[in-house]
Length: 210
Length: 285
Image (cartoon, rainbow over all chains, first blue to last red; front, side):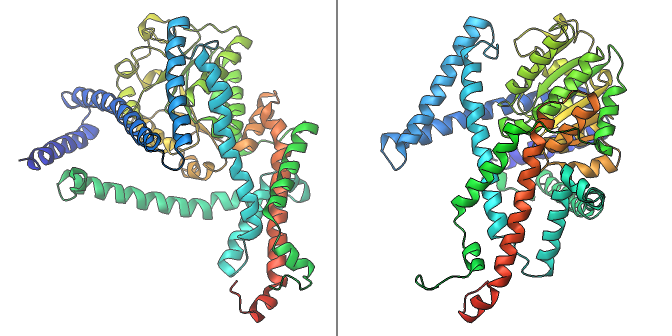
């Protein structure tokens, strides 16, 4: 019973949503809309689960003073501070996203620079990797390397200044071989998704129950 | 390799300290940002199509702008977002903003407020920010039937039916163009659900890394146009005749690309010239 009921609900819901995709008229359309609103609400609650899990994991690390506990403490302090200033912003300005609210101050001067800094570090690793790892060890690697150089030159003004070959070749690489590979991957992924969905709807795939 | 043995130039180059590479990159990217203003970038076909899709809108038409990025992609996507908003407000097009990346939406909102102020546009009349709702697939499909079911209020909690700009907006049928700014897989869902199912006209601005993912949709005609990366942003600025951060950032990107190409060439020359010695000493490549 514990497994049968979820399997029946999954089968009925899945089948109903497939039908409503092809028959958007009453009663399928309205019911689908209702289910979608429910989904959005449930998705909202998953955020609470995420916050709960985050707090538990880091609070445990701080309580047991495990390695890196100070970072966990900083994370928890940041979390609490952001919530507090968000509430203050709501009370003071009607919305935490008001341009003068303290939440936007934290967002603009802490969250945005921190996120940008983390991502900017990637440029340094790419530069280092290009020097150390991007080697013409065989013809396939050489092909990749030559394509990468053409695309990089084709996407900067100096490439066109050197020769019109670079922008034209860059566009051809993007439009033909790149696109063919991408399309193949996308079709494969879509077929995989359809197959997995059918397995779930028909109750063959049950790992989500465990 | 013996520490005391005299090493050849290529051996030294092959074993360059990564901190030197980091320092060179820092200088090469930072200097052009400080001393160079950048020139006009000739627009390419996908960017021209993106520009035309907004240009085709008339006063009073509705442009839905989706903020699907955060600060990590802001240097590439914010310049194109500002350009598109400027083009829309200049044509008196109504702008409806929403987003599927909660942490990035305030960036979009800040740009919206700044550009709206440049054109004396009024919140609730000329533009609105609907905010964020979780579960983006459900949000996209549900908007095809009734937007109010998902976005009953804007980001401040004002009911959308109380605002002039959204009073008569119900579904994609009322939206003349959707312009998504993407740094991840949300673009696939926009195309799958809003375009394939509801025939919503759409154009995208993406990071350079994400642009290849959007090319199949562009070639199949499912999307109207595509702005890819900082270069795309600079091209768009050229098209609207207002050079901004995209144009200013291009010299840094140009020198960054050239440096990476230089590193690849140097690294491979070092690899080639030290190959024999590695073979003799039994090291693997």
